[in-house]
Image (tube, rainbow, N blue to C red; front, side):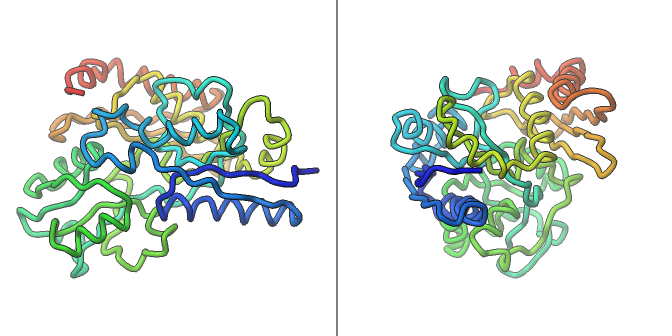
Length: 311
């Protein structure tokens, strides 16, 4: 397959985001040795605003400037973490997903300077996180711990931990792996303890709809099983219409026999109410599976739970 001579890749300018771009560049270089790639880093609202995300468009704060550069023609390809892309509204008009890269680890990690596990943390320990998903689940399993707001990229959060602003951190295993800091992980939490966010561990490649040359060039990087998983997860979140203060978690899994399953949860912020659903696709396509799981949770009262949370 032919490829353009140059692909300009836009991304957030954080160390982790740029490491993610390097993965894309490497995969493109392996497929097209003569292809040149340039990086177009941008600073997003989500990177500069360290307060409550609900005050700055929620998760869209991490994608708006990247999308704008793509639509303006300043770049040909955008690299996003799927978990940062809002699913309650369509992609910006004129853009499309061209590929989802193979999924990384979806689990969360505890970072403690002395290597303690979650079970070993003493009552009252301060856990640095601004994730309502993590805070709700932490409250469900260790209500005697205390969450303190921590925003910023992973390196900045690690620096805050070292400065004593918290006793431990919760971060994504995949993110720590991308910046080469898995050495700080003291405990890897299973999905039964800490259900991941929708889109965890997946990078999405986004193009302009009319740029068929770039779309065709990056399409071979798409991982079919990951595509099915993300299609189910994002449809689930779209039907549920959660907001950025909604503790919602879930993940789909493509199994070796070809089956697809989706497990999802909705929590109250204090972790005292947990709605669960886990379904197998059977003859259902991924989007229908996502819809079915969302409807199951809505029948359990998810709409009232979500709408009752201030945002």
